[in-house]
Amino acid sequence: MVKSDQGCKNKIGIVAQLNKSAVTFVLPQGDNKDFDTRVRIYVKKKDGSIIAQNENVAPGQPFPDPGTYGPYDLNIINANSTNVEFSDGKSELQIQPVGNDRWITNVKISMGWSDGLTAACESGNIIVDQDVNTARWSNS
Image (cartoon, rainbow, N blue to C red; front, side, top):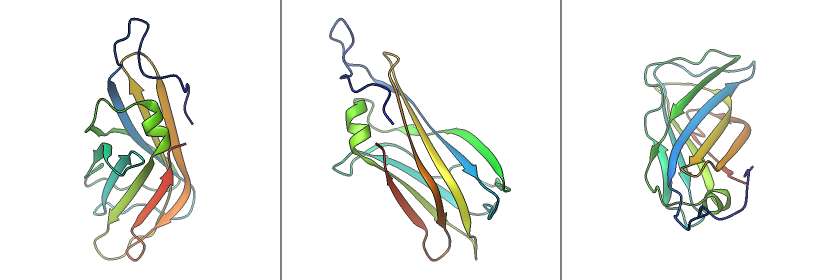
């Protein structure tokens, strides 16, 4: 969901910079995340280039279910990305469990620009495990 579909130029024509990106995990009753499962998040444009990422979210932390965990900061890779480029793209969750780990979560991504514009998306409940360790969803 994009709060506004206006461009990222402010009233004096300066292009706004992406300055905030975060991820929150909402776990329903079902399956938790083990402490030793590595979690990666990528926020991408339509062309696959990375807007923001975190290749080791909450290392060493278990996520018991049910519960909400985060927000965790994402590293901004392309601060010139616009809200339209975000909403046209996809986000991706990858896990690397040690042994077996089945995890059910709703991944919520939030973005913010220097002009106050915000945008967000969420995956809906997804299931990842040691066999199917990647999930992707639209940012719109």
